[in-house]
Figure 1 (cartoon, rainbow, N blue to C red):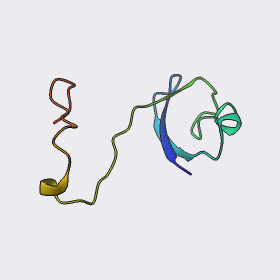
Figure 2 (figure 1 turned 180 degrees about the horizontal axis):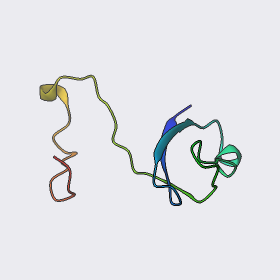
Figure 3 (figure 1 turned 90 degrees about the horizontal axis):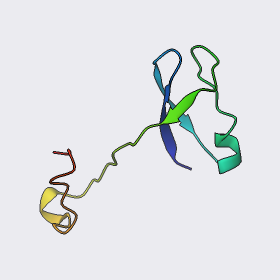
Figure 4 (figure 1 turned 90 degrees about the vertical axis):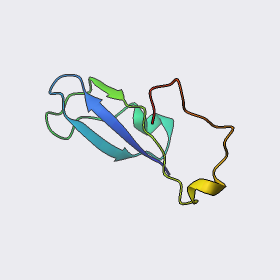
Length: 66
């Protein structure tokens, strides 16, 4: 059950929401203003592997990530 980050296009605030299924995602409202005019944000991910064990074939160079 992933946690997604959203941005409200009306009030500009960001918030996180635990989503169980796609149907639930359609009903999400901004917790600050109640608007359904929201956008899912592209979030990074966390890896607990040491840098030396991460795959070098997954380079993020050229995509704006550091």
